[in-house]
Structures are given as structure tokens and as C-alpha cells.
Amino acid sequence: MMAAALACGVGAVVSGTTAAVLWCLVPKHLMDGFHVIVSRQVRPPAGITVHRRALDPSERTHHFGVPVTTPARTLLDIAPLVSARRLSRAIRQAEVDGLVKHDALVELARSSRPGAPALRAALAPGSTPTRSGYEDDVADLLRGPGAPGFETNARVFGHEVDVWVPSLNLAIEVDGGRWHDTPQARHEDAVKQAALEAAGVKVTRLGSD
Image (cartoon, rainbow, N blue to C red; front, side, top):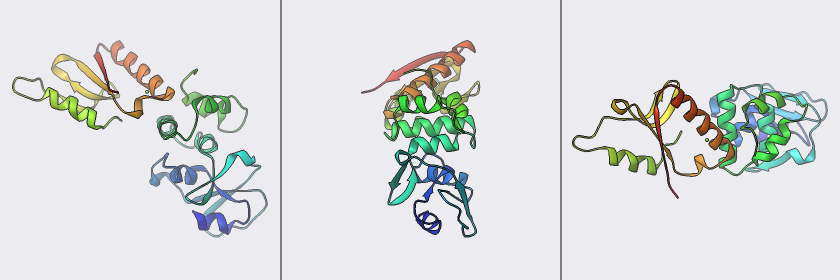
């Protein structure tokens, strides 16, 4: 990534899915070559896609020494390029890692810039894959003689739930850890619970400090 930016000259920054991979917001397999934003016409080496556009200084930074678009700008750029589910997860990851503020993303999504409509659609209004030690503790409590069978991280009516007890028609959501403590996370959790309850599933939420 550093080589790609340097090959495009002074002021070039990696962007799009390349930046999203650098920030660990999307998996590596979504990076289709190297994308770089430049402010002047350049002839890049093979394998590098350049995007000539104005970039505000506030949208530039460095990560691991690599010149890159900020996390917020990166989310804006990838918004129309990835699925709504992938974008929502990237937003959630950025919030959990402290890379963006939810209110700032909401403000960015209100702009008329490319990507804003897709970002706006994915964001939680206003201003919740749990696989944790706490989830393991809950599963341990459900094991034992006479205990009902259960599944972890099961698909129920199109939604993933932390613990599913089929015989009781019960979904247990384990809200431990930082994954469930952001505006995006709380919104997604509320939407999922409403959908499950509408389908007749009983939902119990367990939290931890």
C-alpha cells in the first residue's frame, strides 16, 4: 500500500476498499487491486487505480505510516461499492474501534457527495457477531443433565442470534463487550429483536459490565 501511494507521487493517498482493508473495516478479499486518490494527472503502474479528485486536508491521515483517507472518508467512499450488510458492519467496526464518531458520520451522510445516500441508508437513525468469553459463560450455564439443546451463533428467521434454544422458541442475545455499546450496534440489535418478536420468537437479552 505504501508503494502504491509513493508510485502516484506527492499527496497521493490510498483510498476506497484499499483504505478499508488498511483500517481493518472489511476483509482483504474485497480489495480489488490498489486504489489511490491523487490531485493531479498521473500514469500509475499496473495494478493501481487512480481517482483524480479534490481531497480536503481533514480527510487525509496516516495509518501504519501509509498515507490514507480517514476512516470517515473511507466509509463514504466504499458505501456505494459494498453490500448494505457489509457497510453496516464496517460502520460498526469503525465505531467499536474508536475510529469515527456516529454523529460525524450522520453529518457526512447528509451531504450531497457521492456515497452519501448509501451511507445514509446504512446508518442508525439519530443520536447493535458476538463471539466472546461472556457468550461462552452463558453457553456453559445451559449445559448439563436435562438442559434443553441449543445452538450458538445460529440463523433464526434470517438473523444471527447468539444462543438459540429451539425447544423453547427462545433466542438469547448476549450484549457483553464493546460490540453492543455503540449507536449503530444498539440500532441493529433493536431492529433484529423487533423482527424476531414479530416472527413469534421469544428474545431474552443478557448484559455484562
